Length: 54
Image 1: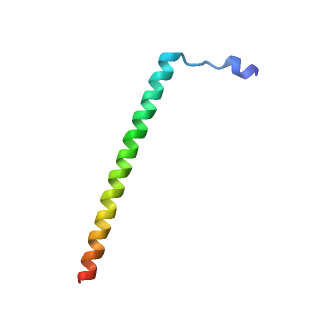
Image 2: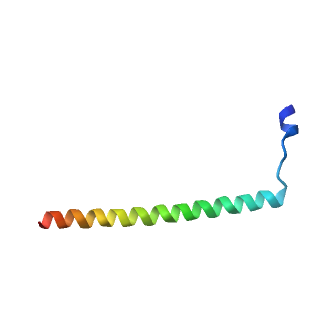
Image 3: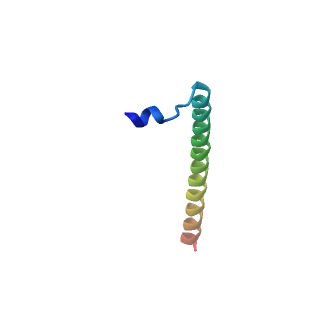
């Protein structure tokens, strides 16, 4: 318990700012992963269909 008293705890403004940064970061990363997955799956489908048609 002594270690907890030595820690510096964020105030409400710092906590809210950090939370906003994390939420925005997760949203941007999720969007990037979604777009990448959609694009990659479409490209793979396009190439496999092109190879099947010969």
